[in-house]
Length: 380
Ligand code: ZN
Image 1: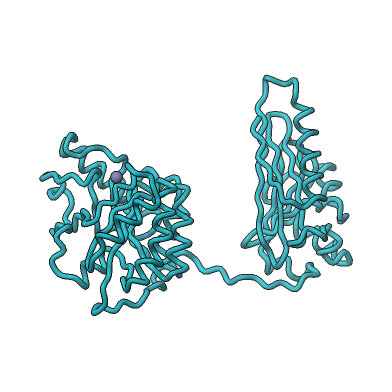
Image 2: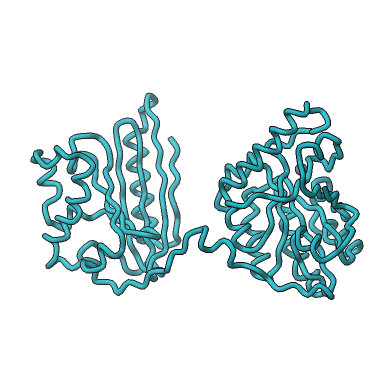
C-alpha cells in the first residue's frame, strides 16, 4: 500500500479525504495479494484549486475530484460551474471525444447510460493547465475495469462554463528559450557561482533565490540526474542560468578507458540537449581531474574553480559563507554542490551578500566573455 494524499488544513476537505483513506485502507486491510496506490494532482485555476485523487490497484480504479476556492470555504459541483441548460450539447461533445477510444462502444447500453446528459455522469473533472479533464469511473461507459478520461481544450468548453475564464497564455519551451538575458556591466566586478552533481530536490529553492535577485549561476549537472529532474533543468535554462556537462555518472575519468570517457561525456551531452534543446559548451570533469584524454574528446572549454568552499565536507552554512566572503575577488569561479541542503542554504544567503559587495553574479560563459585569461578555465 502506498497512499499519498494531501492535507490542506481545510477541515471540511481534510475530513473527507481522511475518511476516504480510512475506507480504502479498511477495504484492503486483509489483502496481502494485491498492490494499492493512491496519488493526487493539484492545480491552481482561476482563483480556484482543482484536486484529483487517484486510487489504483489490480481490482479497483477510482478517482475523486474536488474544486474549491482558495480559502476552502466553497466547494463547486458540476452544476455550479457548468450551464446545465446546455447539458445535452455538452454530453455529445464528450461522447464525440470518447467515441475515438472505442468505435464499437456506441452499441453498448452501458455506454449510452453512462453518458446520458445528467450532472452525476460528469461529476469528476479536473481543471488542468491546458484543458479540462473529465474522468469516468470503471464500468461507467466501457465494459472494462479502467478509469477513462477525456481532455477538452478550454476553447472547446468555454461556451458551457459559467466561469469567466482568464487563462494564462501558455508559451512553449522553445518560444521562451532565448527571452531571458540579464544586463551585465563589464566594468563592474563579477563572479560565477557554480553548482556540481545536481540537479536535486533542493535545486528549485536555489533557482527561486537566483530568480528573485536577478542573478545567474552555472550548473554542472550529471546526465543521470538530469533524467530525473527534467523540469528543474529546463527552468535553469529558461531563467538565464547556464548548464555545463559533469558527465553521465560521475566516474573517475582517470580510471576510465578513452572510449568510456567519451561515452560518459557524450551521453550526458545528449541527455542535456534532448531536455533543454541547448548543447553545453562547458565541461567540468568529476573531482576536477585533469586528464589528457578529456581534451581529446572534448573540443570546448574545461572549467575548474578558484574558490573551493569544501561545502561537501563542512556541511556548515556559516563556514561555506565565510570561505566565499573571505576569498571572493573579481573573476572568481566558486565551487558549490546543490545536492546538500546546507550548500543551497548558504548560496541563498550568499547571493544578496555578494551583490551588496558589488559583485554581479554571472554564468561561466559570461565570465569567459568579459574576463580574459581565467586561470581556472582550460580553453581549447
Ligand atoms: Zn562532482
